[in-house]
Length: 162
Image 1 (cartoon, rainbow, N blue to C red):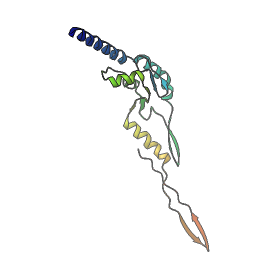
Image 2: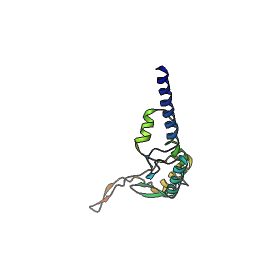
Image 3: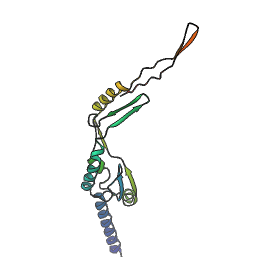
Image 4: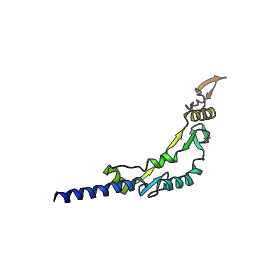
C-alpha cells in the first residue's frame, strides 16, 4: 500500500513539474501588452508580434503639455525605447508556485511594455522643451492715469522641471 502512495506522489509530482515547465515556455493565455494580444505564444513569437506592432508606435512623439502650450519630444532623442526582451521575460519563466501557475492558466492580464530610459538624454530633452513652455509669472496691477483706472491682468507662471 505504501508503494502505491509513493508512486502516486511521484506521478503527480512529475505532472506538476511538467506543467510548470510547459507554462514557463509560453505567455499566459489571455495576456495583452499595450493592446497587443500575445497570449499562448512562445517568448520568441511574442517578441516578434510586439516588435511588429509596437515598432511604429514607439517612434511616435511624446506630447509634453502644460497650460501655456505643448511640445513634442521624439522618444529616440529623449533616450526612451521599448525593451521587448524584458517585457516578454516578465510574462514567462519557470515557477513552482501554485498560485502563479493558476493565474498563468486562467487570468486575464493587461500589461504595459517595459521601457529603457536614458536619464541623461531624457533630462536634456525635457530641459530643451521647457525653454519653449516656461512662462514667467506676472502680477496683476491697477494704475491710475488721468483719473482712469488701467488694469494689467496677472499671468500665471509655468515652470517645467526636468
